[in-house]
Length: 314
Image (cartoon, rainbow, N blue to C red; front, side, top):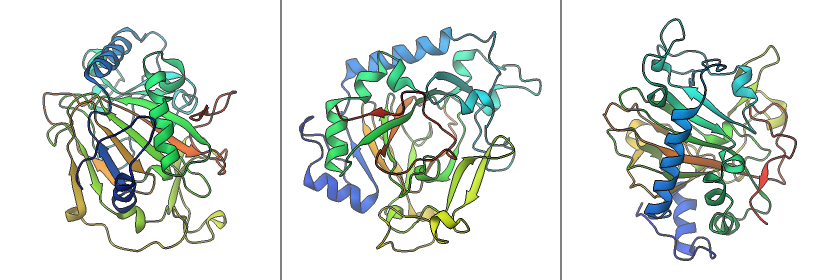
C-alpha cells in the first residue's frame, strides 16, 4: 500500500485514502505530527518515565500471555483499574525472579496507560483534536469515544514481541467498532520492532474471541464462536460480506514508518510486532476509538471512569 498524507486537518481522509483503508485495513499517514509536537511528546514521556514513584508500585509487568516462556496475561487490580489513570507497566525481562528491576526504571517500562488522552496536557490536545474527529467522521463514526491511550516504549534489547491479534478482541463492542490511532514518536524499523500487517485480513477474519475479566479474578480469552451473544459464529465489522482465508507468515506486510507518522488500524485487522533486538527504542503513542452507539459491556477488561469514555466530537 502506498503511503498517504493528510491533506486538510478539518476535512478528514480523502476518498482515495478511505478506499485504501477499506481494502487494506490500515493506512499510513506520514507527517501527521510536526517535529516540535513529536519532541514535546517525547520530552513528556521521558519525564513520566523518570519521575514516577516505585515506592508504592506493585511492579506489574505487561505480558501478552502468549508464546513460550511468557507469564500469564496481566490482570491484577493495578491493571484493571487503569482505564482512567496514568500507570506504568514493566517489560517482562526488566524484572528478576524477586520482582526487582534489572535496569533503571526509565529503561524498564513496557507502556504507560491508559488515560493519557484525558489526564496529560501534552497528549490530550493531539488526541481530542479536530483532525482526529474529521478522520473518524470520514470513516462513518457517529459518536466515537476515546479509550485505552498509551505510550508503548519497545525498550532497546528487551522490548517484547506482540503476537498477531485483532484490537476488537480487547475492546469489544457489539457489533465490533474499534479503530486504532498509532502515532510514531520515533522511527519504527524492522530492527526495533515495527508493525506487521496481514493486509486485508479485516475482510476475512471475524472476531472469534474476546479478552474479558474472568469471574474468578484476572483476565483471559473467551471464544465467541461458542458464545450465544455472537450467534455461535463470531462477529465481524461489518457483520456481513466477509471473506475467509488462512493466516500465513507470507501475508504480513512490514510497516516501517518515520517519526511523526500516523497509522490507522481497523479493529478486525490482524497485526503484530516483533521483539526489539536493537539498541534503539521504538516509542509510539496510541489510542483507540469505539462507536459510542454500540454496546460496550462490563466484561471488557478496560472499564470507564465515572465520566465515561471521552467523546471525540465536540
